[in-house]
Amino acid sequence: MSDDTTGRKVTNMKQAIICFALTIFILTSCNSKTEKRSNSMATISTDSLLFKSGYSEVNGLKMYYEIYGQGKPIVLIHGGGSTIQTSFGKIIPLLAKNRMVIAVELQAHGRTSDRNSDLTFEQDADDVATLLKNLNIDKADFFGFSNGGTTALQMAIRHPEIVGRMIVGSALAKRNGVPDWFWGFMSNARLENMPEQLKAGYKKIAADTNGLQVMHDRDAKRMMNFRDIPDDQLKSIKAPTLIIIGDKDIITPEHAIELHRQIANSELAILPGGHGTYIGEITTVTADFTESDLAVPMIEKFLNKTVK
Image (cartoon, rainbow, N blue to C red; front, side, top):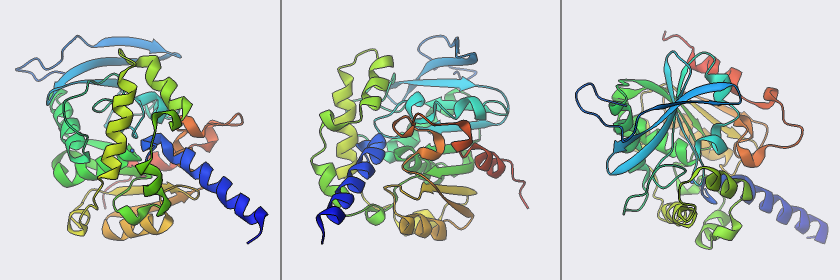
């Protein structure tokens, strides 16, 4: 093998690691009867976009959320190591033109507190379900990216009654869904190797920036302990599902195709770009970025399909 060929392979591997790092250095309201929020909801304006934010008591967490726009709700579930803004900042203004967008931050991420327990995708799904109950949301569509996509799969498995349509972006369901070298990389994950954009995104909003190490370690441990989602659980998903990956994603096309085959009522899109390019995830944004790079029109078309 020539030195040039070897060099290109090493460069491509490094680029793939950086793209994937966004999820785990990854791959990662009120009830009418009982007050669940730990503080009053605030209305905030940022870049001319109004939204409401608050915290809710959720299974031992003080869970942060933001609500944009009006209409049918869609819940956004960020990737590992991420915040609402680092995963979804580019697409929220577009989705909020026609919908109520409910964006959450999960255990130990962003503004949400930690609990004395390891992260699991199942618990994340239960936390989101509890938050929606506190917000009096009986049913919603979901968009989970990367680790958030795996959480969205668990939403459809564990809480199918509240899931309308579901978008699963660059999600892992089986350990063989990423190249073999990924697991060796994860076993040596270090905070200093976390993308600077994600570190800055966390530090910008977290009340205690010392929590960055906690978030990193919990995400890394979850990935090292990741176990395949059983086939029968994936096949039990009834929600109409759009599966998206990039053609240069860390998630392999073969994995996305197999997931598509297992979820009966699903569609598959393999788009140009890396891990999150199609939503403008913060580590993928380049100087020549434009809104036309985003997959929002395709996403909205899927969400607005009528049931036959």
